[in-house]
Length: 211
Image 1 (cartoon, one colour):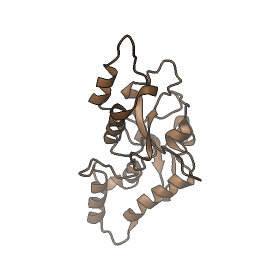
Image 2 (image 1 turned 120 degrees about the vertical axis):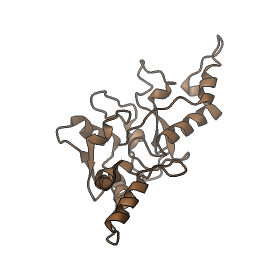
Image 3 (image 1 turned 90 degrees about the vertical axis):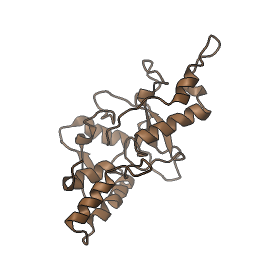
């Protein structure tokens, strides 16, 4: 799980909320068009186009706005951009297992959910060469519960992580080549994209570079 640094809410969204008057109050159900599109775009950009939970590549079609604290919590403002993330799985394909925000649903627990907004979230998980994920500490109950609640260890995601790892295990790579490969992968590209499963690659190969 990669730490997400929140940015300011997009101007189109702020302007839409500012239209509130005695006859109309903005709410999440009425959010649509350019204001909603601007939210999705801003969230994807600040996340480097990676899912806030599993770090799969995000696309406009296969992603959704995720409320970290669910909207059914009466203490939550559904229009609070600081509580919004972007998760993969907008619509499930036939046979596709649920994970990330789609599986999390309305579950939230301050003590049991490791949040990607926590600057220490990345240190709570470790990875192995076959794509598996586990808590960095076996005693970390929250990391264990987060993996379970988000489905981060389902075979589909393990396989995808393994595929991301495979190129770094190429035997023909010498140390300098591997160092450059890892360094480039851990930097955003010219389009603002992070490499998929960024935290996995950093955990397994980050010792080759300073990040």
